[in-house]
Amino acid sequence: MNLIVQYLSEIGLTINVNKSNYIIFNHMRRKEDLNMNIYVGEEKLTIVEDTKFLGVFIDKHLKFEKHIHQICQNISKSIFAFRRMSSYRNEHTLLNLYYGLIFSQISYGIIIWGNSSSCIKQIFTLQKMSLRTIFNKPKRFSCKNIFKDNKIMTLTSIYIYESILFQNKFNSKLYNASISKKLNNTNTKSFYIFL
Image 1 (cartoon, rainbow, N blue to C red):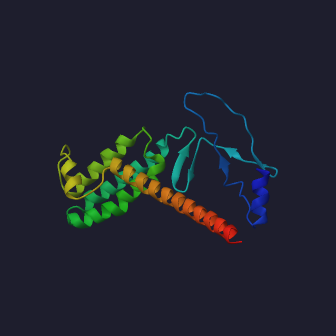
Image 2 (tube, rainbow, N blue to C red):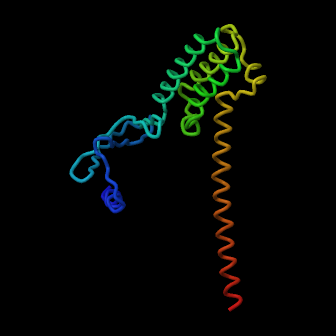
Image 3 (tube, helix red, strand yellow):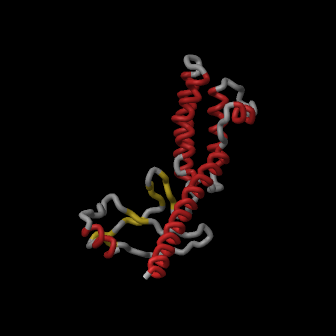
């Protein structure tokens, strides 16, 4: 920790101990209590069970229950707004609101929390409920055709899509780095050949 504090001070930054905390990640089956204290200078950092990092709630078991609960609350508020506006707005306008209010909530950080087995069904149920509200369908109406006809991705589809995008971006960076390295090595070898 001292090396981090030293590096930050060299580049003109400091750690705000009042806003900083730490988590000890462990497996749910292990009940080990690690008594670890981390200090920044003379001040002790607080250990927490969960924290919000870049808009995603992370807990010590990486189950993301608090984050998923937050998403469900936000989607429920949006569904309420859709119900209030459905008599005044057309489907196109409500669908635009869906992408702004619900899709954005679902897709943000989904490659981090989307594989969590807990509570995912709740988000998918709320996603279907929002579409039933937008298209004025009864409670038990199947949303399969709504997703298909309007080219709307399901929760699982969004997770797969975002994961593939991430993987492709990561692979292209690796590929570009390896090509760059090969070109540098080739140029170096060519340089030595001509000497």
